[in-house]
Length: 596
View 1 (cartoon, rainbow, N blue to C red):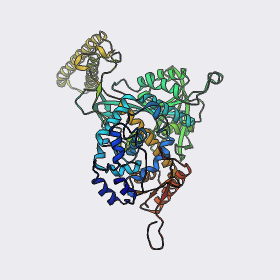
View 2 (spheres, one colour):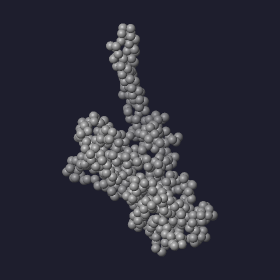
View 3 (spheres, rainbow, N blue to C red):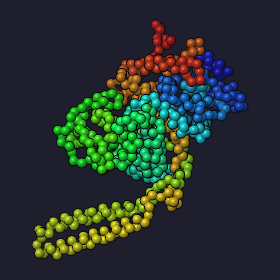
View 4 (tube, rainbow, N blue to C red):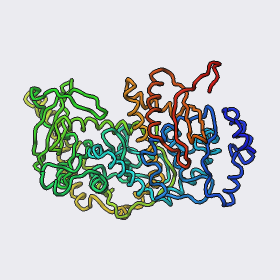
């Protein structure tokens, strides 16, 4: 009976709310027969059926459906994941998780404060799973599915769809701080908080526009260089599309496979040489730039940035033999303050302006981290599980680290004492006979302290030689061992969020030409995703119309109308149905001011 009532015209929000609250099987459970069938195991999954509904909260998120599908949300799910027989289907769960990310539902627990029936209207259901059920399904998908293979397929697909973007890759780490008590993760420096805190490090690979390809997380503090050598570069060699063939590389000694860009943490002339031996170009800031170049060498150039905007820069270039290991290009940018920013590159083919554009677009990845922390909760803890780490993994010997720390402390004291000794020695010629005795005493005390410090440093060095700098994790003392946060569920949810971010980016590109400021596109999209909308299915025409309400000003309406036109051109079919999506802005009014 409840389904019949709903079909007969319960379309307003207040009527839907009353009906959901009166449902006999629980809030929003109005599809009684299907739920009974699922409970006794005779229903494979519930079908998706939309009903006419006005003012559905968050229904604007349906505008993201074409972009989500284009970015591969459902392309490989049936291959790598499955759910046991039940009420909710695999497609419905994946759509719900993607819609949650875009609607800024930062975690599953937050769904407790949203109407399950209204979310159900967005998915063509009576209601969405309760929090406990959704957590169980995420756990099942993560633990029984092939999350890594799924992410790898998506990464390859994204690279193949845009080989030009995949030819320039940005790599950087983002620390996820852990404040729990289940394990004592190693401390690492968190730049945004200027503190050394316990946590995990996620190493992201993005393109020039900040769009992510994949992420690798680790509990160890081995650093960016080790991660590049051991995991990131080997994976890129397999996945990057459009790499030149062996014959092409042999014919052109300056040709590279792709370019990897990172910050000063990855600075290493030896590593640059290792990359070039694989014919991989790299770019980073010069960590030890020498004297400034004459300003007369700098010429003004127009540099095209990642989103097409033209920027004027004063640039100059030289070739240098870096650390007697490899010839590299050094490109410097002269800022308005007179400071010279030095960039090193082993990309021997591209124009100077292209290299400058690539390097100074690195902020797109920093902006990606900031945006994802704020709006997609990539710092959040998905579960509280921990797991053992690889016992063969090499880590810094804590005894060696302690001796090294002591040596640095003693060396710093020695430098200060030597400076003090030098300063007091300069005053020797200015002293009279009465002051000489005090001078000799002070000078002797400082010299004695210097001698003692030098002996201590030598003793520490001798002790340090007896210990290896790196040992296997299994050789660590028990008090220094730790477990890592379980990565599977985190990796699964991060992949969903990557798809959601890429979908949002694609939609922002459509609207960016209409809006005056670039940042306004994403801000407006956030309003779209969380806005109310009317859902109007037409069984005969096989269409589902998403009718958005007007926004706060004409320019926003114009941008959203342009977006709707682009979305309609995709002729997207809602998954699990034969209904074509139609997007429109605002309602038409008849002469009597009644909504049609």
